[in-house]
Length: 185
Image 1 (tube, rainbow, N blue to C red):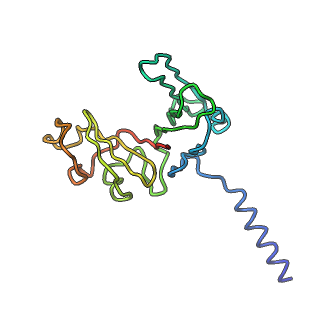
Image 2: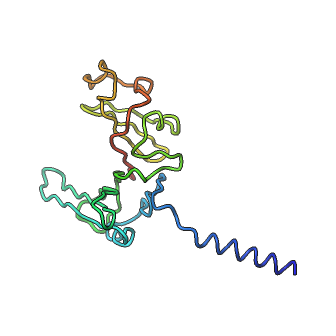
Image 3: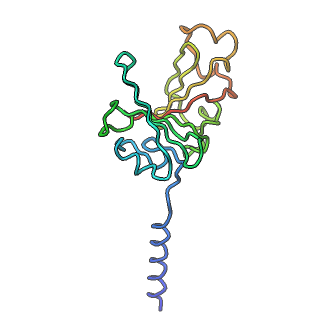
């Protein structure tokens, strides 16, 4: 009788673990939902079988052959992700850059497109901050992510000088994330 109980318990645990589905909105260093760092362009229709894909293909060599693949939620016009392959126009290429467009995508620590700089700096180690013309680029190597923050979120004296080194302490904790990217090399 005792063996029967153990057998049923083990079968129940195995069945429960097999039926759990991964979170379709989870972000990690090597995956975004069902997409991972080794997914090929040709496999995107299988990965996003319940969603719609749209592809913009630029043909001008002077602008770098842009090849952005947009993932729309099925039945809506809501954009979930924008994907950029390593090589333009190559179905065997893997995805290099993922732009998170939907706030439902979150890291294990709860970081999403709706987060603030305080959320980034309290949950992850900021690897670098780059000062550009209109934005700051905040990199977090632990999750292969970078975030843009509009310079209008900064104090007035830090907004206009691109050569000024901006430290994390200078960025207001309430500064909102403008864009959220995962980059795979």
